[in-house]
Length: 594
Image 1 (cartoon, helix red, strand yellow):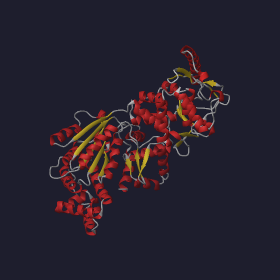
Image 2: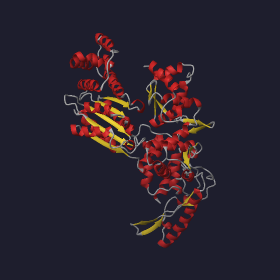
Image 3: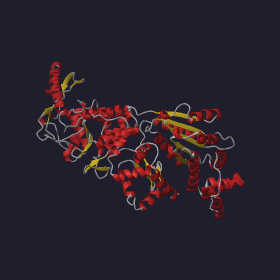
């Protein structure tokens, strides 16, 4: 058929070796078929032989197959002569039918003569019919992937360029996840981008994102941050800490204090001077109060006298209450936020926030006296809040105040998008990944974070592995299906982390006590102590395991709060409370590094 002929042409093109015998290299008049019944009989006979060949190959793990996509040159040198399935065609000009069948010479896989396994497998699929293509369009789609993304699909994976981990004394190849790619969220990305465009035109707006833990809420917001930065805007990010709910205003003050540094770094001197002068005019005698709440305002002015005045104001005793903070931040935002420099505040884990914090955000959004171009984005786990939660009260107040608001909920990935994720991670054509992706979907319900952890657990258990000989990822669907693999992501994380060394577990314990993100100053301080002198090396170990990531030059951050959650469990064996002595020691460390 067409796919078979196309495969033979590709093989001859790449290798320069003809697979057709001289007697059958062209279709002659002698090949004309007088009746269609003879053609049907021949076709049925060859079809039975083809089915037997496919059935035999399914039991041979050295074949390229959908359930275990492997490929080998076993017995290819002694490959018997095969006859391609005859295709009956009709010549309109001559009014006759003819057959395109011909004998094929023995051939060696392209992989044996130096071509990548992807091309070798594709050509063999076309020629031999294993995992056969339903049409030339399907083959064209795979070829397009080879050309458009050669790093993933065309070239064989090199152990030196891909992350590896030591397991049982041997090197285990890791999957290549695209951390910066968001799968299946094109509509949601469009919604949040459109909302920010409205804010840039001079409005305030709120955007709420709900979803289960690991559904990709934070990653969705991160797709917008680059656009905000390009447009000249400022992005403030803060995570509501479950352990510090008794001090709700400190986090938001810290975020706005960092805004002063962003303005200094991204604005020209004249803009900084204009903002500093505007703040002094707006606050007048209250400027000292602002300086105590936001000491970094000294960074907005190059005048040494202003910096000296601010330094003299900071540190005085002041009562932090809601009305003071609310009034000051409203006036502050009226000066620093504009159409040319909109401000975006992203608060994560709103399910843990209280009334006070949300009322403060509402006051800034609903300010009628000039505060504009303020975009608030809040994420929360909708399965961990009820209808009485302050989040929904705030939404009602925003609606009553006439502040535009968008609310959406993220579900799991659909099977097609999940299959794309698995295909990218393994560098395997999507059509060959479908059996594996279907099992992953059944186990994870499409939750992106759980999908990644589940696939990593399959690699750790060697149910999904990279064949160094065949240069492809292979798996056994029957074994994966029969395995009693839990659908609880926390269990998978705990199972993985309990296998860590004592030092790696100790590093997780320490980091979990400082929050989702740990300042590099704390790391350096700990590394200077006798007890934690190798702390940085321990961090490198758990970074290679995918538990934390490095932020900037020296800071570290947990990849997900579920990972930190398990680190907290390691501290004391339960989810609530800490050993007093251990907690006290780390609190002292944190205070010394502020």
